[in-house]
Length: 113
Length: 113
Image (cartoon, rainbow over all chains, first blue to last red; front, side, top):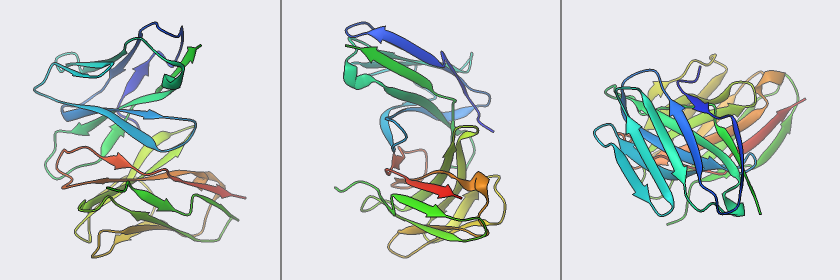
């Protein structure tokens, strides 16, 4: 079963607006990663935030992590039509030797030109 | 560096058959993980290999197996295919498999008829 839940399940915005997606998870983590997936293709890594970090930026992306609430958010600023995709959060459990990722249910983002 | 490659990209099989999927990690990466993605269950971890040894395994039946070669290339095998095995199978590689970023391949789309 998946560890995380993402909210909202689907999001539709106009080009130029900001998009915010939220992710909640269940157990203690080592790190949390965000991925993008276009139409059933492979996952593209966006950003990794470690459990001792609270915020991270990469270009138009801003990720926050609140380990006390077991939640994370991904903000995409000044969205573009090319940002249309599904976005997943994935957590790596705080467990020695375990490298597998637990994925959230994903948010389907549609950016309207 | 070349990214993670997976072959074949598409595969159609019938129930009862077996299938072998191949994954070539990014050069220098020693950890290879496999994931199954279906509309109903989302992204689920199958297993991880590191230095030719299975280091971690998800909750899948024994029909799903894998191996890793000395050059870090990995294969996964599914025997006695069932309709429910239809999915996108994704392979991911990382340098050490110790909390570092996992980079995904484009996936193999398996359809079982």
